[in-house]
Length: 360
Ligand code: 5GP
Image 1 (spheres, rainbow, N blue to C red):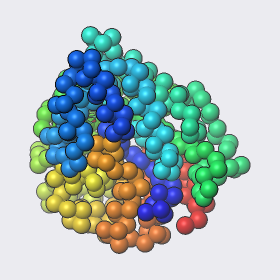
Image 2: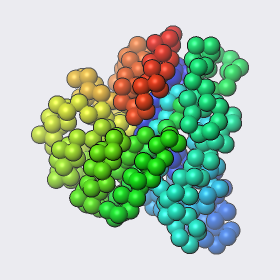
Image 3: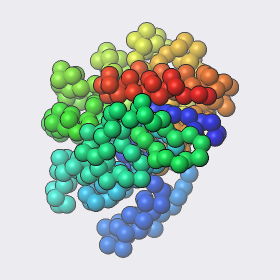
Image 4: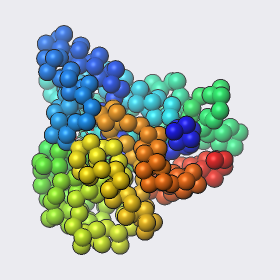
């Protein structure tokens, strides 16, 4: 466990509001209860419950959407989430979030994103490396200082953060397009790609396809939640689209598996999330095993560390202990994640140096 925590790691599939600290979630929910916006007692047990089903998770996501209508809360959550990932030696984080419109609260997708960016600028207990967020930009530090902290913890943790904007499956084509346009506008502010997420039982692939195609035409990489529920037609369409990465990939028919394996599309693997939401029968039966045996590109991720009470270190520990992987195999798994990041080559080289120089 200590080894998994100390080792540098890359997180590519973490939803901002699903990464909220439980203490912060309880505090903000209580506050909303006192203001009469929600009935705190209705959500308290879901917040503190472990082992939620996918539908229960989406009930909690509705709460996140209420919490996320307050700009200050969004800023606070963002700052804390980055600090928490850095604390466990995540050296590169692609944090994804759904820009939200809420007229009655004076929130637009743009103002929501400003609150997120303010949160990144407000990070001060850890150091943002290679940062476009207007603070502590330090591209040269790699040669003078080790990037991540080992041992006594005398120096501040350092993390490189980039953002993905999520299209929610509840959205219309126009709303999805607005998100892609916002992502293009915010490229210089650290946005590096687009994600399609939200309740997999809602929405049609054709609704999102124009925006995803547009993102691709404009050179924005795309990652897609795929096969969280059985939906052969959609899985087929997603594989035909050939996204830059895929999340989950749990319910695939044999022919789709063959197609996915041949495509070599990197897969964001979320072990705890897939188990807790019953997308796989157990961790030992996870498709990780099959994919690992053929060297398919994979990245161990948390999905929603707050929601599923996990951490990147814990996901590494689960993989190592369940699949009996050695330290050098785990090091290799952590290292090859660099190939799948959406950030530019400068960041890739920085990360390669970190992993190459890390002594196990
Ligand atoms: P946010 O985008 O508000 O920062 O993060 C929470 C949102 O991410 C949820 O409302 C949901 O739309 C999406 N999300 C989080 N976890 C999952 C997941 O496991 N599957 C899917 N499909 N969407 C998710």
